Length: 197
Image (cartoon, rainbow, N blue to C red):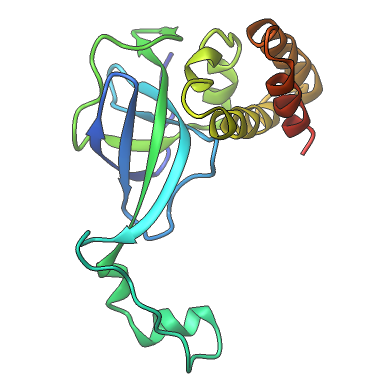
């Protein structure tokens, strides 16, 4: 599948076979929880955003409160323009597949993405193509159940908006989730409730 170019969000700064961490170019510039992103050009690796963190560039120095005398939050940043250089926004993504020529593979690639690989949001057409087959959902369900369940629900809600018939897509996804979580009805119910939000 040919990738559609969208603006760069940032670069991979840490990678493993199951996921990658991206440092955003813009402070607070991370995509939404559950968004589908891709990294790499010729053999793109796809990931679902599972965690967003804004912190100090220097792990030994925590941010301090600066707004006691400011009228609003934006004034804090106007009065302290250096904050954009002292803080960073990162996000983590769970790998859910990769591109192999014109084929989409919905399982882990043989190698993680490269450090400094550019990361972009996926356009609706790309999301629609990737979610025609939901075999990758077990990859997103790994990790802490409550966090993973929220990520899956957010991902499916966003993916539904990329489809011509969002309700039909959510019905298909609900059936897939029912098969995957047939022995954990409480977890299944939590995810299905999250799809309604």
